[in-house]
Length: 265
Image (tube, rainbow, N blue to C red; front, side):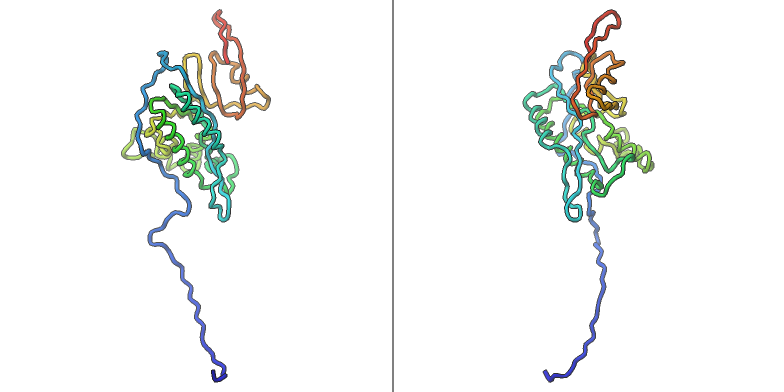
């Protein structure tokens, strides 16, 4: 107040704070545990009791990170289409449901393509969403047999482990040494808890609805309309449902081997 100049020393303090108990910024890949555990329905196989089969293919459940700080998850699977399939299942009450593979996309597990930052660390949300979807179906159809075939996108998981994390390949939980690998699709989705059968070994793994009708994910892709199906059917002696190519095709032929004309599609 006297009008004189006063001098005071300024002090600057730097502090780096670290949590005593760190929490993950992004979700780690962890197995999911079904809240309700279901027993697998007794397989009907080829005794004639299977009248209706619902075949589902290539949902590619996955997310892309968007927004400030890549904190928002935008699905690139079609939730409306998946809901339609769910409603069809409830309306039809099929004896069995066959999932033809590529139900998961797993973009951050590819070893073939460049992985952009916005598709990294999205596996856990995809696992949670697909488990929730399958659990909805199982809760409404407890007696329906559900078979899940591995596709090339599910195969990405084991391929990545083999190529870049061999120490984790074929690891098993000590309380389930005869079960699925700890880092495997059926373990992470808890398919056993949902009573869902998983057929691995892509591309060899397939499932027969009947002796004449096979289902598979497929490993063949051709550009022309119908060319993929013609290639698949060239050496077949049975009809087949195949996914993989994301477009509808129908090809028929007649197998004349053995002196019997057998229609195949």
